[in-house]
Length: 161
Image (cartoon, rainbow, N blue to C red; front, side, top):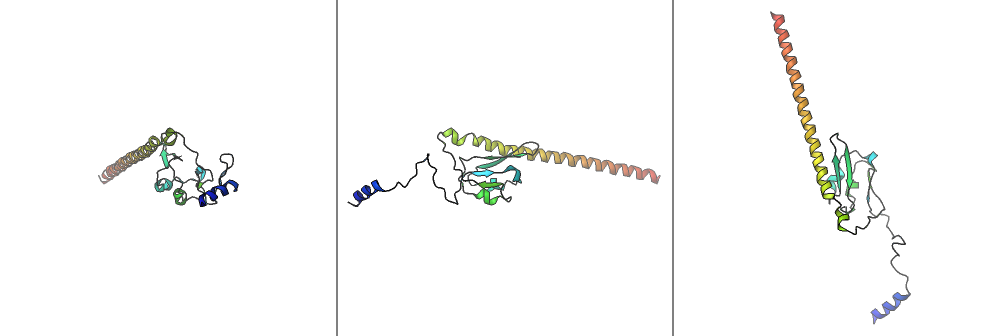
């Protein structure tokens, strides 16, 4: 009987839900939406990438050393760990914008796994190239030092004679 009166009462009460999508839903002050990124403030430390639980942030790097920020909102769980870990105020921030719905499976992945793997490989290639150049420079510096030493020894031997 209680259920019957509850049902009749609901006919005359104001609806609890909003008329979404015609009216925006209420967002509390501490709402955590999409992650925003301000490239000009970023110091490229990659802490956000390291602390992101699902791996929604990744940085790629070209052979000149320039890094690029990539963010997958379908993978993100909006925990805010990246924002808290960022040492530069305002480089990463959470917006009030909710993530759009992905209606198709291909919109969810959208090649993220391939991009993620390529980003990691690009950084490894850059590190290997940097190490190779450092080794070449060290070898060249060593050759110059040996040549100087040989010249000094040769010059020292001539003055003794």
